[in-house]
Length: 85
Image (cartoon, rainbow, N blue to C red; front, side):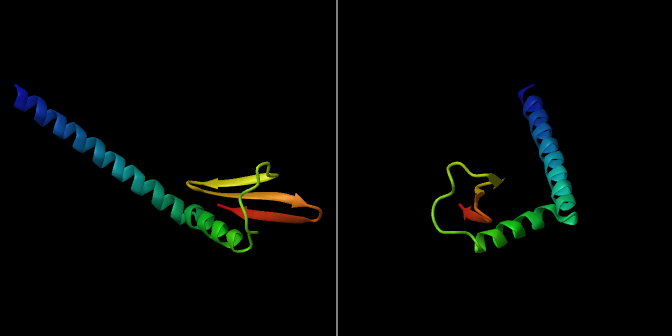
């Protein structure tokens, strides 16, 4: 009885893992093919090259978030100050 339950649980966990991995791979591939994943990383890298030194703005005019990174934008006259974290 216990062996049957354990075998069933192993099959259940394995099937969930396989479905999760296939779905994750599919959506990641779709994001890369449309340029969404790579494009966002390129935008972050490029903007951070032009960023001012110092901490991010406490009250930015605009913010862009991506996982553990953030870019804040603050208007100063006709210019925009960029800060990255």
